[in-house]
Length: 298
Image (cartoon, rainbow, N blue to C red; front, top):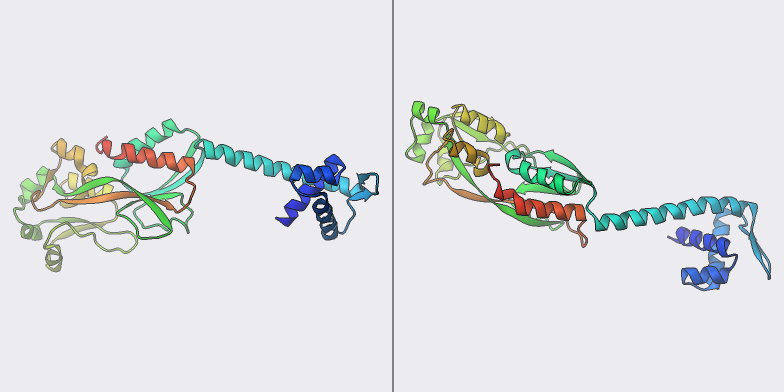
């Protein structure tokens, strides 16, 4: 910062040919300007001004240095104007990590792009738990919340999880009447990408069920794939309501044990703690909050 202050003092002095006038423009004394110029000359090892009691003018080295300094200050001014504009209007790149639940996110993302064409969305669809700060994301959308003090959050909405299967599968294998009946059925299970652990189904006796030799047909870290397999009669899956709403309404899937299985979970957006929220992120959060769960089956 001392270097920048010295450059500003030098440029203003060269423009006005006066320490007094340069000090007036910069809000400091003529003495402070003079000392700043002396320190700058000492660092550079050259004389920047010819000075006497009546006048001051640039040396050849000073004239060369002035050209560079004016460009430097011009770039700084341009950067400040650019940032001021960014604060006012949503624009620039926005990098967000989102879970692989495209059916839920596609409508609000499309609406956001239409409303804010100057924002470039860089979306990373993944179910792994990313480190928002270390990996350089502006925000992440996650199922659940966080206890990380470095992050701020907003709940976007709630969704339910259902056990589902195709009518063809249930006709062929029989429709379970109790959770213990699941032992004889093919289970399509979701596993977490980071840990490889299986996501528990929302059943009171899930641990007991897992401990038995119940049939598991697939372990998969893709909700889309589990949905596809369930639709094609490969077994029973536990899936979010927004993923299977259309299929349930159209009769292509049926709920299994609906009286025993109902679990609500939050979807949350997280971003680094900051006093100032960039406009591009603020409007993205607003669109998701307003639009996300109004079109689960869109």
